Length: 128
Image (cartoon, rainbow, N blue to C red; front, side, top):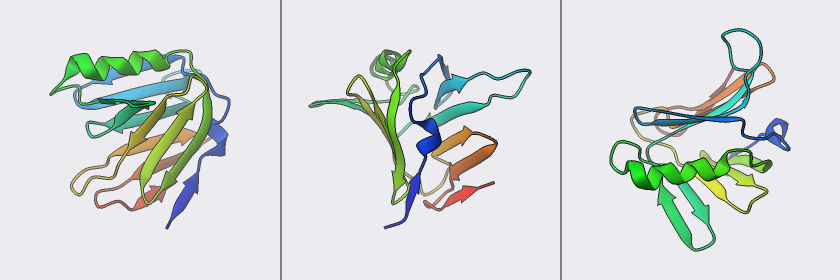
């Protein structure tokens, strides 16, 4: 069971949430200039889990449900890991964001501290 720990996201707070096409971006640090210093992008198969409640973050198919991601604004990451290519971000407010791999497309990206991790088509996690 391959595991990637993203401890560098712990204690970071979501400062902005960006939505475009089928992607939702959580911005933790805007940095200086044009390049973001810390962010996570997830795509349409992602879910927001709050206890028994689940919301699919598919902006194209269900924008009202995907809007529930706004509850993460100003929330703090308490855990960040990818197990078997499924990204799991846990937040201090009790919400969990999950992003599974996709057979055809990159499904999530984690970037911070000069490193980028991306779930490639088929589920392999690459980094640079």
